[in-house]
Image (tube, rainbow, N blue to C red; front, side, top):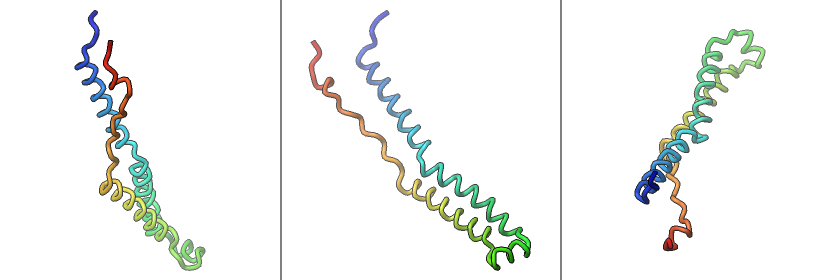
Length: 104
């Protein structure tokens, strides 16, 4: 078996860096929080729209499910808009001192 050439190693490293950057963007915490708040916001908003008069009077006349659901929906949309407007910067490759040294 022959050793991989320097060109092959650089190609593999760049592929791994690309995969790492893609995974970092995919699992950005803003996407997870925003998605969960949007889903829960929709569910709670629907529950608020279908609340009975007894449930509203129990909360002193405030449709708490509706207002909470709308707040959650807005917060989730804020996180998703933030993610879209300010995406995660790709990681910069680390400079290794061994790369600067000539090989013997």
